[in-house]
Image (cartoon, rainbow, N blue to C red):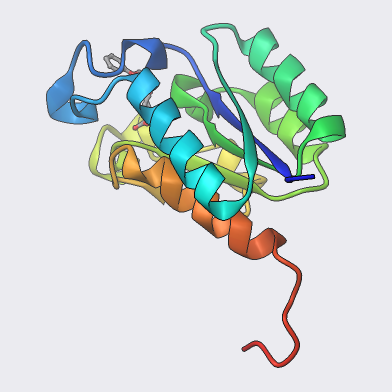
Length: 152
Ligand code: CA2
């Protein structure tokens, strides 16, 4: 049975590729999902891919992932900078969490520099565009793979 990774996307990411391409690029969320599915297949992982504009829905999916998943890749979007509740839900997960931002949040406004989610994430990828999602999947696959004898 392949291990399952939940790929979760926060508020307004349904607009990806439809507005503000100078910040977020031209790829749509459907393009991101297709790329994640291709990468997951190649890595022998299964993915569950969701987007919601509602904080409670994201929290419910995180609770579901606690039972069903081996890891989470999450772009919490604007909730990154505001949501203690999302951080609390993620901190209840025993598996690794990768935080992804399409833009480099540290090059942008001051209020985007702080992330509640980073406090509970195993790693953070930002500024690599939508490629960050597949990088995060590759990193999780490496972390989840059983250690090989003699591996560095
Ligand atoms: O860079 C990222 O991925 C962000 O998580 C995107 C969030 C922003 O609030 C974070 O600071 C950084 C915004 C998501 C909204 O995405 C849109 C996409 C296209 C058009 C409008 C919004």
